[in-house]
Each structure stands twice: as structure tokens, then as C-alpha cells.
Image (tube, protein in one colour):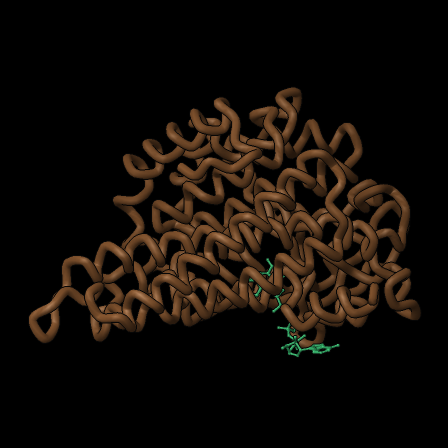
Length: 383
Ligand SMILES: Cc1cc2nc3c(=O)[nH]c(=O)nc-3n(C[C@H](O)[C@H](O)[C@H](O)COP(=O)(O)OP(=O)(O)OC[C@H]3O[C@@H](n4cnc5c(N)ncnc54)[C@H](O)[C@@H]3O)c2cc1C
């Protein structure tokens, strides 16, 4: 375990118990989930029973009452257990994004109704922003929510939605004013079991993150009660999304950082064992220089991200610096992991070697949680 400034004794204990739980209960099922393209519900329920979902949600709503530090520790342990490309991403969205939308913007009644079930894993959450015609340009979404009597009627289509096959509770970004851009966006909670006209599409076939269900979702005259409008005021959705996205950026940067550190560790071990031309791979100067560079980049990333986590926990991380961490760490992560894979030779391309999975899973980090180009746009606006 690293010696970051934000680490506490409590977080170390959490890391230790999470590591043991994941190794014992979840890792043995990893391959089956990768083949099926989805993690089974049993895993969610077991993790909930172990108190490892919704770790930063207050105890009064069934959570573990921790901080964002608890969420980051969980993210790290899921990654170290090789579960980042499945359960790790799914529970990250569920516990650290969707549950926080409910906590921050839901009514008291909604918090009581949904958060305890999310903490036990009985209710699985998803956030549906992206559409076939609008990803980066969120203001251009076409899904609409029309007010009709005591309900909103939702029509539209979403794609690339994490937990799309499993989700019970979906936070949908929709236009309550179709003529407006940002000011027309609102967030509505849709309970899948009660939503006539809601349909799940394909579980999409991805190049990585094989155990994660990522899906299309369809809404055809789906009615939800007026109180399912998060925050109670129309047109707040864009701002609500932006506030939460700062966290998502740091979480994404952290995931890439841990992946980079793992890659450097496993490659260092490999080049000490493998020989060519009568020497260990580590004895070639190219190997030494490549790994010296990789390790330096991982340490620089750790130093930067740790500093931002300290600011995040103190409540003063600004979104622009979070955007810098998101693009730079995910970009550097992909480069470092690629160099590491190269040092495995042909074995690096084989799925039985974890470096191959780290490499494919790393690629998406530059795309989701706001593409790296969008991060640069946000930074450029502040110049
Ligand atoms: C595995 C996975 C899981 C996901 N999970 C979710 C989820 O749970 N919920 C959800 O809502 N979405 C999710 N997404 C969607 C993801 O957030 C989007 O794919 C992402 O925001 C990019 O949108 P897009 O795919 O439409 O690309 P586009 O917006 O079409 O972008 C294509 C390219 O153009 C660039 N570009 C776009 N606009 C500009 C600009 N103004 N200046 C310069 N370059 C620009 C982009 O950076 C990118 O390189 C997921 C995606 C993946 C792959």
C-alpha cells in the first residue's frame, strides 16, 4: 500500500478487508463474467452485505458513512484484484455517481426509498446521458421529458450505458425544454420495474472491459411521477451533471494511475525472470531505460493525483485542475502501459497475462468521463 498523504489508518483497514473479500468472493468468478459480458447479481448482493457498496453514503441511508477517500480505496482494490474492467466500473458508477445524485438532489423520501437498497446491492444504479447522436455535446441530447398531469413522459434513446443490463434505477438526462440547450436539460429517475415503455437494447460488444454490461436503452412514452425530477426544478440537469463530473474526472485519473502502477510492478517482476541472449531482460539497457521512464511517470502521476485528492477531501478541488488530471494521467497511463506490454513480447498479447487486460481497459479512460479533448477545451477556456 502506498504512503499517500490522504491515507489514514481507517482507510488502510478498509483496503485490507476489501482486498481479502474480493480475492475470496469475487475473483474466482471473473472469467465466467467476462464470458457472459455481465457480472451476476449475487456479486452485488455479497458486496453490499460486506458493506463495500456506497462507502461514502451516510449511514442513515444505509451507506458506510465514509468519504471520497473510501471510494478511492475501493477503486484501487478492485483494480488490483483485476476487477476494474467489470465490477469495478459498474460499482464505481453505482456507488460513487448515481448514489450521490440521489443523495444531493433527491427528495428525503427518495433517499429513504432508494439509497438503502443501493447500499445492499438490491437496487443497481445507472446514469444515462449519452445518445447515439450526442456524447461530448451533452447539450444536444434529443431525449425529451414532457410534463403531462402528475407525470413526465420520457421519449428517446441512450447508448453506451454502464450497468445497462442490470440497472434497476436509471438517472436519465432528458430535455424538459426541447427548444433550449443546457438550460433545457433535466435529470429524471426511472425505476425500470415500474416503467412501461422502457426497454434494454443490446449488451454492446467492446474491445475491453468484457465483464461490464454496457448497453443501449430505449424510452417509449415512459411515465415517471413529477417528484422523480431530481432537485425538483426543471433545467438544472446540466449544472448537476457538471458538479458531479469533477469527481468522475479524479476517479478516472485515479483508476489510470493504479493501472499504471500495477503495469510497472508486474513488468518489473517479469523482466527479472525472463531471459534472452543469455541475460535477464532487465539487464538490457533498453529495458532499464524504458522502466526507469515508466516508473518516473507513475511517480509523477501519483504525486499530482495525491495532491488533488487532498484538495478534494478538503472540499476545494477546482474542476479545471481535475480536468488536467483526467486527460494527463489517462493519456500517460496508456503510453506507460503500452511500453510495459512491449516488454512482455508475445506473452503481452495473450489474455492469460493480466498486462493485456490492463492495456485494453486503459484505452477507454481517454474516452469516457468526458473525452480528453473536451478536458483540454475546458482548460483552454480558463487561459
Ligand atoms: C465503456 C463505456 C462506458 C460508458 N458509460 C457511460 C455511462 O454509464 N453513461 C453515459 O451517459 N455514457 C457512457 N459512456 C459514453 C461516453 O461518455 C461517451 O462515449 C463520450 O462522452 C464521448 O461521446 P461520443 O462517444 O458520442 O463521442 P463524440 O462526442 O462523437 O466524439 C468523437 C471525437 O470527437 C471529439 N470531439 C467532440 N467534440 C469536440 C470538440 N468540441 N472539440 C474537439 N474534439 C471534439 C471527441 O473528443 C472524440 O475524440 C460510456 C462509453 C464507453 C465506451
